[in-house]
Figure: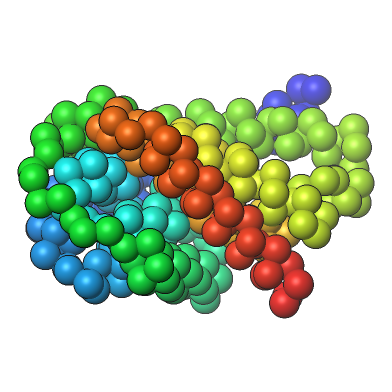
Length: 280
């Protein structure tokens, strides 16, 4: 057990410099472009799903949460909201960068999430379009800060806070994985339920719905360790909307509609994951 703990700490703590630099860059971009990004989505019109899909893939503090507030005020369409949810990467990108994964792999995952999000968004707006209610809704920046991020603490403090938080989850998840690997073995782990066709994407999609950064951390780590297939990984990452779902249930008072949105997000993520399982 001491060896497992030592191995876990060494593997996890060596990622801290890369995580910190990544979050520092992300916080800088957020502070420079956050408000402009929200205005761009507001003005996107029928191209909302495409613009939302592209901007959603850029790790920004609470962007999916902001999208939920905009949808609650009927400023953006349902298709744009779903496109942003599907493309949101949450903590996936910092982990892939800190683990020094190939640039091609990172770009492929991000591109797939953008394309899937945009395509799903356009289809939703075509078949489920409802005339937007132009009445403005309250701004949810304070909810973003409370639920998901530390936007008002400044770039440095926010980057440190994010780094420490994600490092904690990485240590916890890595420890659990190392224990399983030690007592079960890598081959047995690869044959676990998350690596099986159809069932894997179904379970991974459910994990992705958890509105906490630990979900995307766990999914990414399991994929990198070989315990989760590409289809299951994509299913979990597509259904993971970060803090967006929390804000949706707070800002949008139509609870039945909120549940339908969650089911729609989950269904798209799982079906996409199953298709990827068959294709790859």
